[in-house]
Image (cartoon, rainbow, N blue to C red; front, side, top):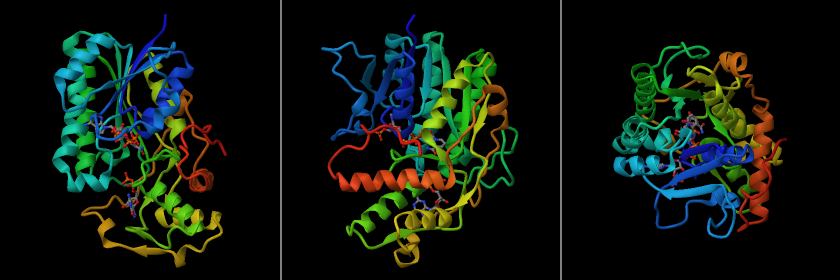
Length: 339
Ligand code: NAP
Ligand code: GDP
């Protein structure tokens, strides 16, 4: 029997890779996309076929996580076996400017999905996109038992959704799990996240289209992995016998400055000549260090990352250099880079 998956946030970085993975596994994939005045489906264009004249397994539905009645109607119609809740305002910096909207989509949005599943009596497994931002000021290498101490409206909203997911699992017996994912990047990463902002700027500076890259805090340390490997972990979490939460991370650390230096060096440029500071990119509170421990996922799910550090930098810079060379040509239809 064909399995059906519903992905909220299918037009985002992770949603697009997850859709690819599930389609390759033979799933019928349904994705929720927001109505907007311009197309927001560039990341999944290469997967989309007109449902009228093909045997496509990918179906898109307009919906917003702030609209509960729409979510209920769609869930009843689709009747999925697996639901991946990836949608929401996902930028930590923006969450300081739009804290209420962030709480509405990231926090309440997850609860709306959980309630929609519960009240529709649909028998499905639920994945919640939790985040290392929930650890915030916590110190040390973080695993599933590390204390949470979010330092942004985004982190706080994720933590609300995280505990709501655990409550529905324990209180209603739902198969509901949270993947606590540390930062994961790719050529499809949103252009305002730091890694993509850097790789894009390097490509444009190398091509003579820009001179400077304006940055905030260069001292922050992150555990950056490669997004295609992380969506595999999401899927594995929903195939486990028992529902439980998992950290996904590389266990390695890189500072923003290291990433900048490596990216410019890869393109044959001296970063100190091109990087300038702009106070606007500083946040009211900053999470200085995030490093994860994914031992549980490796032990129980057989999940492990292979791409991080310099290799990730090269994948991203090469993809943006290629995109600048082929300006106007969509980059998503190219094969997922592996080296
Ligand atoms: P992303 O690229 O920003 O994608 C977010 C998705 O959510 C997009 O499809 C976006 O639609 C959609 N969306 C935003 N607001 C919505 C709303 N009100 N209703 C319906 N859809 C809405 O994020 P990502 O990097 O793929 O991350 C996926 C999830 O994992 C997010 O929840 C993120 O917070 C979480 N997470 C990410 C990381 C990471 O490092 N990437 C780490 C931990 C957790 P548009 O395309 O129309 O904007
Ligand atoms: P985050 O870990 O979810 O906040 O992911 P980001 O990619 O947005 O930011 C990673 C780190 O880079 C954070 O510590 C930011 O403060 C730092 N950073 C420094 N300059 C910038 C910038 O210009 N843009 C962004 N997005 N982050 C920056």
